[in-house]
Length: 310
Image 1 (spheres, rainbow, N blue to C red):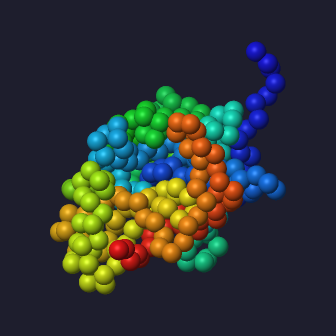
Image 2 (image 1 turned 120 degrees about the horizontal axis):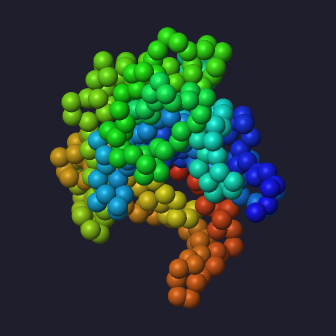
Image 3 (image 1 turned 120 degrees about the vertical axis):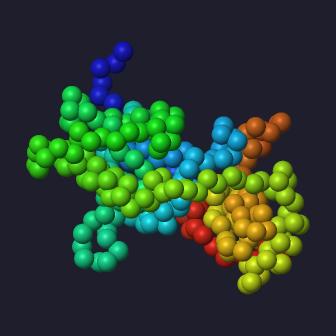
């Protein structure tokens, strides 16, 4: 085996833009594109916290309690914005997950920085990992729920021993651990997020399986006072086709289409199609398809928009 040092995915510190948010503790960071190449992407997970798991086919399209509010809080807070990152643990290739800390300028404009992991915990959308007195405060631990290492945020227990006053104020790891535990106690006292009596458990409904697109259009016209629907763009197929999820207005809850997932095609335009390597035979990208999807992704992915559908 080569003894050559492995190249890190990210430098120890830097600035990147948040492309999208995968869950309450994991985002995708977008780097600077080199000429003729797409911008590099890195999956970045908060160190030493675990958030509830989002719905997927593996869990019957049903969230762990508070998973969607956790994702939404982080999405609304940082998507499309530049953040300062500090890496703590990472793999050897650009496809590996990176663990660390993200900071965002405080919205009040006072020049201070928000630690997004700490604020996520403070809002009850994640829970600190467990560390006893025998654990080394200087070592990293990274088995987040996003990796399947925990059964959501409920799988983590209180780390009461980590809140001792016997910490070194010059040790950033110990300070961070203490901040997490203090934020956790605040969230528990306020009974917010996963600590609330009845956290939201979302079940995703898919067009074609749970409702038809015609039903969607008719119910929006009937139940929405504005005739529009609020959706989060969850995925970009190409420059004119997106997967959307219904998030409002609230009256659509009674219509049974809240959290409905459907494909939206922009009216009046057509964009080059991306190739499909799984097709028989495989198809290749049409000219400018990658550029078109990237153009749209950087502007619309994980944004919440008002839409008119027909």
